[in-house]
Structure formats: C-alpha cells, structure tokens
Image 1 (cartoon, rainbow, N blue to C red):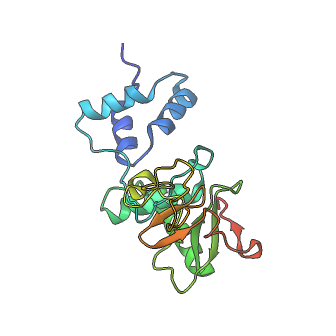
Image 2: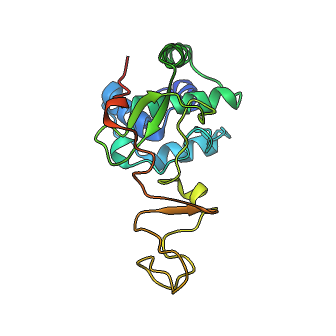
Image 3: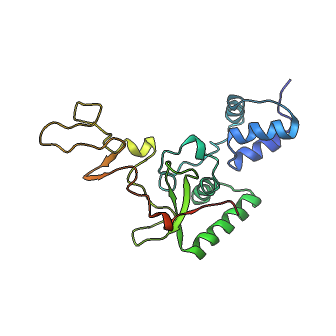
Length: 200
C-alpha cells in the first residue's frame, strides 16, 4: 500500500519547491506516516516532475553548513531563485518573499553568509560593490563555484598549502580565484555592522 495519502498535494508541494526533507517532516506531522527522501525522489521521477530546487549559484554561491540549511534568509534566496527562473511559487511563499524583499530594500541591506557565526546568515548594509541582494564571497564557495578556483595547496604538491620557493603560501582555509587571495574571514564585516537576519 502506498504511503502517499494525497498525490495531488504531493505534486503541489514539489512544484512549489518544497524540499524532500520538508515533505518527510510534514508527512510525519500531518499524517503520522514515516517516509524517506528517496521515496519522494522516486515519486517525482515517476510523475515526470522537474527538480524541486532551482539552482542559482549567483544567489547562493556559498557552501552552506548543515546547521544553517533551514535559515529563513536561505529559504527566501531559494524562493527568489525560483521566481527569477520563472518557476512557480505558492501564494504564501510569494507573499513571504515579497515582504522579505521589501524589508531588504527599506534597510538598504544585502545578505551575508559566514559559516563561522552561530546564525550563519546576516543582513548587512549595502556597499558600493554589492550588485545583487547578497554580499558575494571570496571564500566559502559552493563546490560548483569552487571548481573554478584553486584550492589550498593546489599546484604546490603539499596538502598544507605550503608553496615551493618563489610561490605564495595559501593560508589554510582559503580559496584562490585568479589572483585574489582571501581567508575565510575576509568577508566578515565589523561586529557593529552585523544584524542577524531573523524570520519576520
């Protein structure tokens, strides 16, 4: 017997961009039925549905720590990515996104991510170099973005990033893109400029 209680509801959730983890939790809460991520992945494929998450490395370029993957700003960035890609958003998700975007505009702020902080995501004052709704990182890139960069120790023959004579040493925890070298703390603003991006 199928564990799926309402296929139309499940299809709607996937089309709205709900993650498999969210659906697993919602099914347990709503129906007291335990499901798995692979079950929902197989359901999506059987129904010929497009992938539930629109990937946008321009909006979410970071390698996000597991502890921060449920953060409200990250959810809003995913919704924004879906909107920009022309993918459907549910009415409630669209309302929340519109409200969040208005708040960003009123604060003249952008989203900064720092995995070393408890909240991870913060709203910080917009600067001259900010060209979107995020502060673009120079370190902590996602794996897809990092593939275009030189990892610590790359080309040096040393796992610790120590370069041969005549070459720069790559600090541990840094990522080098082109000629730019920055530590993971390079994009951390002064403490007084950081405000946690809380759920409205």
